[in-house]
Length: 468
Ligand code: ARG
Image (cartoon, rainbow, N blue to C red):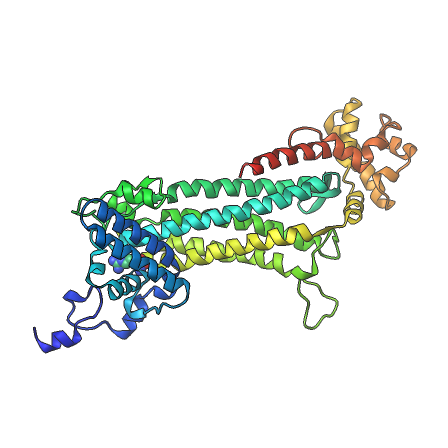
């Protein structure tokens, strides 16, 4: 062996065939340890399962398995305690841990990588990580749903204006509005659960791309790691990140919902609406305008929806056009994935902490609902009940509203004589339906806004949530 080769030979775990050391820039450029080190728990779990499997099929003997498992557990304890030093020269979390194992337990440590590759290793790590994160997200989602259902229960009879086109449309129950948000989150929850099914499969054993010539037991590692079963195809197992893309898409939809809630909270907290007060501890002030109390938390959540959408596009684009099987492109899946999950969890946490503390200004909501002729549809329906065709009723009420606007009055403030100018069918009983309460109570069917229905919907939601 020439001395040049000896000197320059790479000191990497994969350095055997290399005659010169890695360029310093390339070393930094290709390394992922700075961000993938957060997978260390899953990496160690995967390695322990792999070692146990190698023992089960007779590739490692009992002492070897014990030494490897103990070594890995000690490394985990060191990392947990912040006593592990990560090296960029060792590229990624996998090789940092494997090197540390060899250093700690000696030559036996070199046997761990038998029958596997970093390709199936990293695919396993990410799936374990994503599975754990989905479970955390679902816990946070459930917590927020419980908060919304509690508010709905308390505010079932609180009347606010319902909007279409952001124009006052018909009165609704504030509790009903909260349950609309709850329904959106319910579908988000289902989407995360559904995504979890496709995440929870074990790619371990796919090795680099083609499988391995050792008599491995993939069912066993899958079982040890709590996966539902092994994946079917080795090429697919090491390469596709569709489960991460699906998670990102699911997260984007959730964030879209949170951005809509946020927009409403921001509007409602404004002086023009004044429907709610956000707790001071969730707001910030202005450095120049002393009177300001800004709804920063909902604004930021609204903004962070953009960030998560960006990560979805990044993941789609990383995957796009990649030939089978593993390509280094896939190393780019981690930062978007980590950041989007951190973001989603923060936003859900913020919401479940903030929502119980919002104050509902019931009088302001009620007054706003009175101002916008929100019971005009009820008057039309009343006329239909008295025999007018709906289109004629619509016309009559339109004229009545125009006259009320001119006089700066609410419909209920017009005298019976005035109302009868628009239609002789109108009688004294009209005032029952012109009231906001009458209007809301009349929408008394499944999915309607009558407080009675809201209470029933709250019960159903509570029942569902109690099973989680
Ligand atoms: N750090 C790599 C990643 O994140 C691990 C797999 C590397 N595999 C390889 N053949 N270079 O994807």
